[in-house]
Length: 330
Image (cartoon, rainbow, N blue to C red; front, side, top):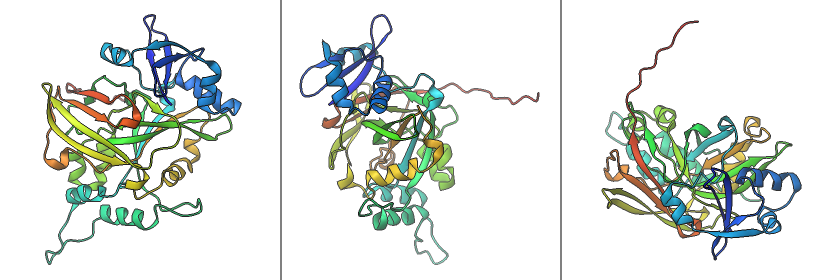
């Protein structure tokens, strides 16, 4: 089942669910967030709760997308309680791009093993532990709170000071935290983990700076287990034409970590188990247009799609105007 949400003509949030058939409004659901928290509180599976509530009128999601009425498939009434985070170097082949960005030479001219390659190798060796045990920690980063989440169809804003504005096609886990601090997975969604790869290339210690950017996810959330072998497409459109296009792979078949291991190392911190919070945790990628020498510009449109996740995720790129920031003493 796929779920999403949109604003109706009275600007009220409506929740939509669909299986293989038409998208229909979920009766009595005020938002995906309220639906998920109700499921957590009652111990009811999300799909079972939706079936219990019942489905109403059919909805044309593509038409709503074109009108700009689709919302991020989950939000929080207080954006400060939605967390955008992610992991890197988790996919087979993902080290090649990162290593090329960070490569160094020693005095004899022989390539040293970079920190990126060391981290990737650690994942290969211990990222898929057996018997439910915790494996090696992945790379982890913070992107921001809900104020940095951009709805499908809305513009990803690149700061005027940014050196690059590049897409990262990824799968994100969507979570709510129960009243007792228990994390619950709502499902999985496509995401664009938008980043500044030129800044990151200067020095890997600039990774934190490069990740403090907008992100978009959705338009729909896939309820249930993540498919083991996901095969999607990432493209950049310029003036309506494909400037760049490439397949991307995800799912555990194509990863050096299990989803359970990535979840463990995120939610082991009590900070991320605060009741009522929402987490959108992005699992990484091995496919970047930046690695192929593409430089994006304002007006370009990022498009990420994979059949299992319903509608493609589309976002235009917008470059923000310079802003003077002055700190004043009190």
